[in-house]
Length: 432
Image (cartoon, rainbow, N blue to C red; front, side, top):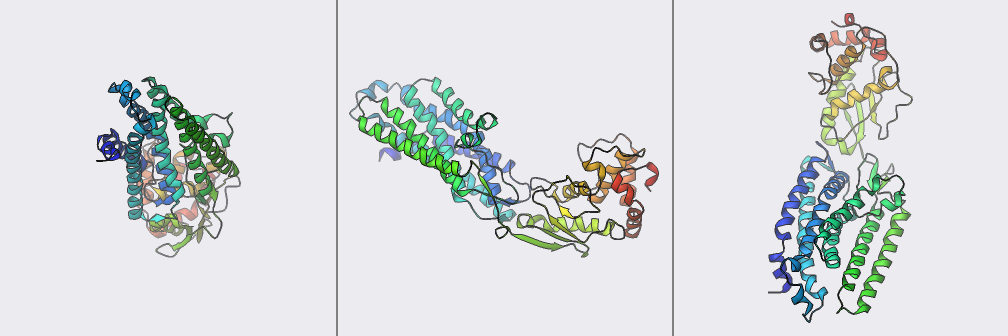
């Protein structure tokens, strides 16, 4: 049996890696879009999980690197004819294989989940590969750090090193390009954006360069090692770091790029009764029918009033400085929302009601209650949103009363209260 196969069987990561992968998978799923999926979202979810589990890998990597010390084999190794590099290499490779397998299994689970929900976009292989490399880098910091320090304190140092790079982005005095060089880089998906392939290639090269630098330092601790090999690894580390950092710098440290009009994929759908046409990014195809039903209902409610509209198009970068407008005209969609359709209607009132986007104190003795009642009724939900506290018990009764109106009665009520909907100037007497 080869040494590597033996190490694969006895490596502590044979048991640690599946546990960490399971934890990473749970974290990734919890940070994914609830009802949508895209390759960018998979990259974002994998990024969030990586940032959390990386310190654990650094600590366990240091613990694994101290195996000879734990078993009191350092004196035996000192008299061996093999170099420390040759002794440690199979142990290190075995750990990396187990970690890579666990990381890839997390990605495959996310891809399978995405395929069930309806996976949108194109895979960004360099981005997904970079997060596998990032986990290998975290464990490498611990393992090679143990070969340099050779003391239990290396566990704390390794964890602190990885955490330090992770939180560096929160320091405003550090240039963005500098913080972007951390292999444990946080990625955030967004509508109209795509992962920057060149950035992820560059940051992967930086991670490999840092690993070579640690390897050169660890080899320098081995007095039996030929210095020419150490110099060679140091040169490789410096040159690859320069290459990777140059690529990242050329991209301005930006992990995302704007999609061109040709790259964006849009879909158009009509409400069941044909009142409203909606145009949105293909990412929202799995929830397009619920959006069409929800906004079709709003279109029906406003069809005989001055608030009527016939088409909505998604705004991927909404700005409400010029709001309000005459009526609803765009979709502001939040892919992280668990109730995406109803939430889009609540947000849609930013384009209609003055009190939503301006610091205007509306007149009326029931302005807050009335505004919440009407928005909830328009959104088609049976009760007030969680976290909304209305002390007046009459509010729930008035919401129920609006929900009992027939189609013609509801349209007539909206037509009679156009100004109140826009101004939020509600009184109790306005409700049935």
